[in-house]
Image (cartoon, rainbow, N blue to C red; front, side, top):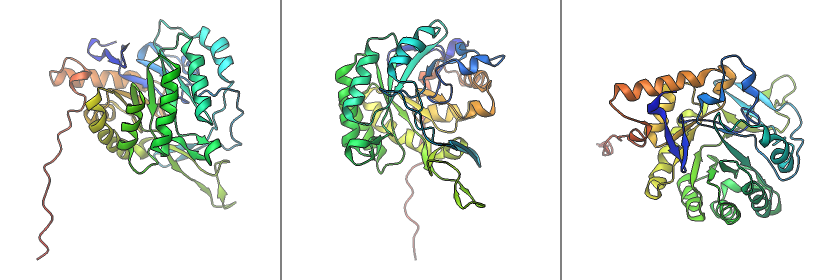
Length: 318
């Protein structure tokens, strides 16, 4: 690993700024079956979304390829927190990389309970997925309501001393305001962004291809949106020293560098693994070379260095 890639995120030492995203690598073992892939090549792995009790997930189809991306609606299929803590986590090789658990709940209280359970484990950090339906409050997604987001982060903060990373939804009016509320509630880091909502239609049956009718759109198609959201959130988070995982369509080293310049301290890779399972080494090499070429000693010196164009006066209508 290149020495200039070493960095820290929420106080956690990482050998690379790359974080493998939740849902894309199972519980950390799936891609280790591929020749040439190693968990040592990334800074951290965010494990599959976990709920308090086991979930079977949504009916098929759950995944659909789209132009420049994919739609998924897995439905948080997982064995439940007890199985993850007792059966899966003891098998993780903690010498290879850092591990982050991604948690989801259908009520504020459930988020608090699952955070409490993982607080007593050796997991490195907890990522809160606040884009799940809030069953007890009308089916509204937590992440689309800043007040509800605050309550979820707040109860998790009360129940764990682990670093908390809150994954922000792009499907809301003001993501910067939501970021501020999550920071006020005690989050240590922010993941920007979660998937955009999308749909694909089978023209023969005239039905949605996804069994859940709609799902989360990821991949290169959402990169411009994700970059803007990272920039917007960074304007808030930099004042509180709250770092960002920038994610959404990163397929190359240049993509990753764009996110870092926009304000991301680390970068999340997910859908790209389906195209190229060995893409992380290429991204590492590219970031390292860019830093060297620009006389930068590390990733930290590049974070948030975006220089905006000066404001331009409206055109004269005469």
